[in-house]
Amino acid sequence: MPVSAAWLDAFIEREKLPPLYRALIGKVHAPIAAQISQATRRQSSSVLVGLCGSQGSGKSTAAAVLKALLEAEGLSAAVLSIDDLYLTRSERIRISQSIHPLFRTRGVPGTHDVALGVDVISRLRKHKGPVAVPAFDKARDDRQPQSTWPVMKSPVSVVILEGWCVGARPQDPAMLQTPINALERDEDPDATWRKHVNYALAGEYRELFGPIQLQILLRAPSFDVVYGWRLEQEHKLRARLLAAGEAASHVMSDAGVARFIGHYERVTRHILAEMPARADIVVELDAQRRPVSLFGA
Image (tube, rainbow, N blue to C red):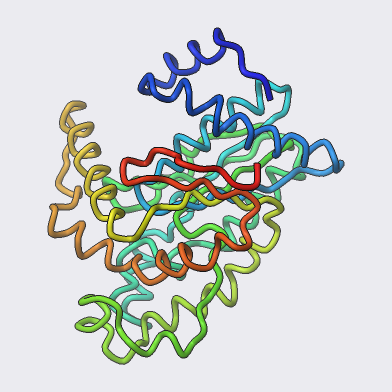
């Protein structure tokens, strides 16, 4: 998919991206968009793309770039983040009381409204008319009121579902017995929580991830770098809220981020080990999030 210099300059300025993105779009994102475009033109129905990457890997920016490239090619596209499908705070409190206290924290499979996601994706791909897309406010740790959800026109040629666990598969249950971090050892000693997370991936999440036709993985070099990426995200969120004169009381401290990332460690490690062999496109990242190789596009 050819990208003109004028288009690149205009897009980078509009999205306020760093100058290095100019080269990345041409070398990484444009070939991926071309493959998505080819898949779309080979079939008469909408294509569902899964974009997976650990916290801080640049998924949201990559999804925005791909959407813009596809639209420049004349295709309609919509982006849905799995983060916007989180259960409400009150719903997570209920399952934390009925199943396990760790489900109060958003993030892992079992804390998303899968039925809502399946319905929204289906309507984006097949419905004719406006579709309200869920939105989650991480600063308040709760879903935004439905009256404020953004509205997208449908049907679209491409739906990009992006998120840290998009396309993840369950582990062998035998692997769940031994804790992999302090959170699991101290707060889930009998493996109840991690077993329910795994059950969710083996069950209802198959309805959300099963229809994915093209799976992309932004692969971090290791889990060890993910904490630093996630910490950087939280610092930026705090700075943005304070600059806007808004309360930042719900933004996590550094210690809070360390505990929070422990919720994601098991599934993230499994994705990094298991998904590359079956993903359609793998973008290998270095510790600074820079793509160092591209496979499949």
